[in-house]
Amino acid sequence: MLFLFQYIHPMKIILTNATIVNEGKQFTGYIIINNDKIEKVGKGEFNSSISGKIYDLNGKIILPGIIDIHVHFREPGLTHKADFYSESRAAAAGGITTVFDMPNVKPQTTSIQTWKEKKQIAKQKSLVNFALYLGATNSNFDDLKKADYSLIPGIKIFMGSSTGNMLVDKKEVISNFFSLGKQIVIHSEDENIIKTNLENVIRKFGEEIPIYMHSNIRSKEACITSTKKAVDIAIKHNTKLHILHVSTPEEIEIIAKAKKQNPNITAEVVINHLYFDTSDYERLGTLVKFNPAVKSPEDRQGLLKAMSHDKIDTIATDHAPHTLAEKQNSYLKSPSGVPMIQHSLQAALELYKKGYLTLNQIAEKMAHNPAKIFKIKNRGFIREGYYADLTIVDLNESMTVNKENILYKCGWSPFEGHTFHSKVYMTIVNGNIVYRNGKFNKTQRGINVEFEQ
Ligand code: DOR
Ligand code: ZN
Image 1 (tube, rainbow, N blue to C red):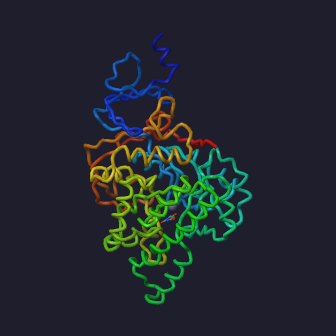
Image 2 (cartoon, rainbow, N blue to C red; image 1 turned 180 degrees about the vertical axis):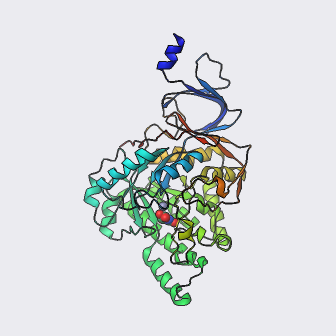
């Protein structure tokens, strides 16, 4: 009888002896998972008669499933660089349970139709949960206005072009999008400043531009000017504006001030800018070419400090894989972007070990705040009744990144040779253990997360 009962009802998963980090608290306890939801979060020892598959975590840390709201998984059309299966597998190994994917693919995700086609790909191939941005163009406002935003995180606007030629530069179009009442996320670099800088650099160096000039071409001024402009428009239209990959302390201050007038203006930093600066060009060359460019060591310190002081709302990756052959081209031909998602949580945990972040701040900036800002339904927190998206890490183990353990399709990482003093032990997506201790359940698929309107 009991056997039959268990057969009919899928077995519960019980995680015991864990350190649970959630909503500003840390405690020893257990979590019971029933189907795709968290059934119970308990303090202390688990000593109930409930039956299920027990995983004794022996003090390991449970975080709410990490949500990365900024990735480029390259489908459709750019699958020589990456695809939804390969990169979502790397994400699962890195403890990421949900990703929001960017529209600069082929064809670009700039219509409801292309969004639907891409959604089918993600549904079939993604091991983790997902949502897909719509991309703004100078001419698609009417189409994007009609979309159903219960499955869409928001609209991405390239205010400043980057990889993929998606610049939106018409003033009235930007105003239209900013006053639509939907979540806007922007790439913020001033196109005219970049253009002038590039012309000056070409005049000086010809086509053989040294890589370190990237940070002079895509200068601080380009970032600051664009962000000033964007927050002014967002204040005027009361826009929900998330500024992606903020790379200068000056912009953080501009955003902090703007928040006083419009609290829905929020800031993201990406791991790239927290880990790398202009001093890395010598060692890594075009491998650390990305947009916005790395800034000076002092700027990087400024970002770390701002993050410690909670002036930054979210930490993401801008996971942007390109093949090594593409990256190894000369400056003008080498595409901007670095793969990052497999190690972003470990990188954040390293910053915890160095004293820049608490574990609760990691939970806040990599799970709670993404869920709050984008109004994700029933995720981002360890709460009874919420989806069982959970990330379990071991702070007592180490791992060194090398070619053999990199899971990206492109097969390289700027972290090669780097040792992280933590390990992702288990990743649970919708109640399914997708990754545990080096092994994947490759049959699981994530779902399109939902948003409150
Ligand atoms: O470095 C970057 N790479 N910045 C972007 O804005 C786009 C990304 C890409 O798609 O490669
Ligand atoms: Zn990006």
